[in-house]
Image (cartoon, rainbow, N blue to C red; front, top):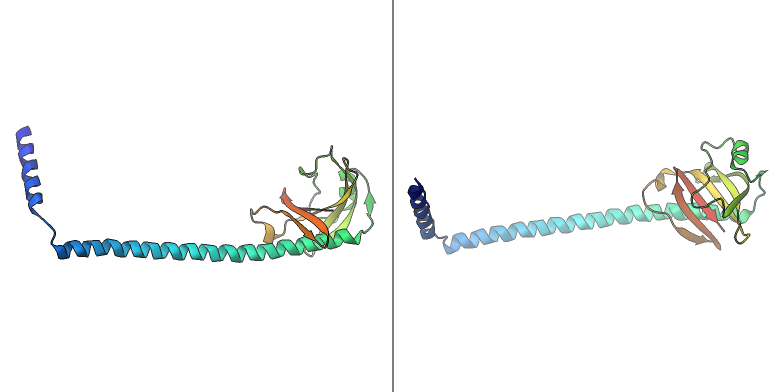
Length: 185
């Protein structure tokens, strides 16, 4: 039986070794391969261009919203409005600012051993009610304005927020626990 398998194998090898593609068949087969490569390259290029255009449109729109909110925070900061409630206890300020539709948070970005809350008031960010809190940096004694607002839908992406200078005010924006936070100095 083993001998028959080898014989059959040999016969198959001989049969296929005698077969050859003509020049026309070989040329047609090569063109078919090249044609598919061209289509794949074209589709890949179109997909990359579409992704780039979409990213630019989204980033440009997001960037304008980010700058507009930073400008609003800078304006509020420069207004230097008096605090409506003075306290160094978050719960006291939260109790006074009871019209907020979110709870104030002690930000992880501003540890209590470095930052002290002084007081707060209502303000608006993106046309919605927000909290404007005065905080003091215990290390250098400088007073900053901290803003907390519900995260606007337009900024709900995973893109990291950053600092921007508007009208001489440095505004650092970040997202934390579903809120938009802004620190102005």
